[in-house]
Length: 286
Picture: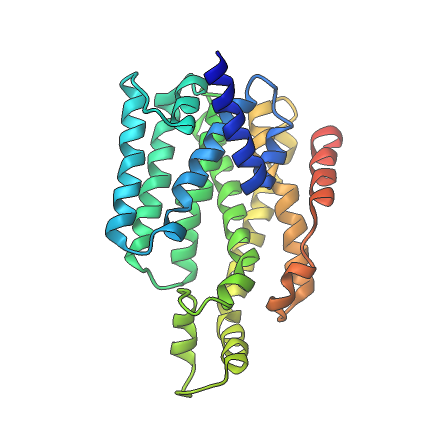
């Protein structure tokens, strides 16, 4: 029992420290279900950081294969000795129902090592298989009997949140000389040598069309998903999955306010207190 509690606490801390937004969401789920959500968030963190900690595709694939085999070990009833793996085994009582979406998260990050060009289609595909699949898995952790329509709604909300995360991370990406977004500068710039500031300004200009298309895609998703908000009062699992909506709308408005000055985006993004208030309003007042 002590080890089980330690595993749960490890996942909770990982979620709180590294994915605060989903952690805040989890606080509005029932206490009995939160450990499963924390385990899924921690699993996603372990998989998603592969690109950041491993630079070579082969090493990245080795790491991701470890997680595929870890999921196999859970299915076989012999989970590997890792706090996240053991927490998943203990808390996901319908593991077989959730697993396909967890596999999809791993496979999507594996595809990320292919160096796909940054386009709206590639960003949407990545968000579909990462944030979308994760949100669907969290819905199923709460309600293994969720139907295909509910799963699709949860996935679309998770995809929109992931796309918003792409925009949120742009100031960091623009400062990273090895970022995939740099390809857009190469396509749009005819100047061989530029000062660093000029390069950054040109990159901001070069990515604006893609950013605007991203915002359009997110806006369409918000408009489409809003109609489902009236359906969630009697469905705690779907209500949880759509808890991303108030967070998406907060950040969407912030990005609209910043306009073309993407490097100043951090100054406009809502803080944790505003996010918690938005979630409280959503869950308690509709």
